[in-house]
Amino acid sequence: MSLLITDDCINCDVCEPECPNEAISQGELIYEINPNQCTECVGHFDAPQCVQVCPVACILIDTKNPESPEQLLKKYQKLTSDA
Image (cartoon, rainbow, N blue to C red; front, side, top):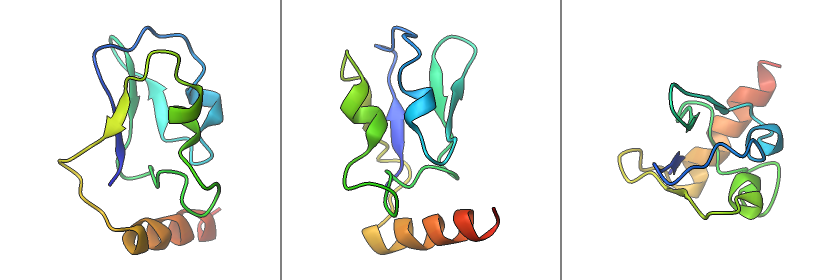
């Protein structure tokens, strides 16, 4: 599954530069994660880097975008092959 930033986001700016897929961007009110680019850091790291650095624990699994680890790996491979 991709990740989701909740309304608890305090716009601290620490998550955006940590995302290896550039899936995080400033939204109208809070930071947002593009589910088409989020791989939960599969292929890059053992754990999602944005979750690791978030000081308010507002980054959760997006249950509206279910993906298996295999699907996340395929997405990672597609994103990095286009680079």
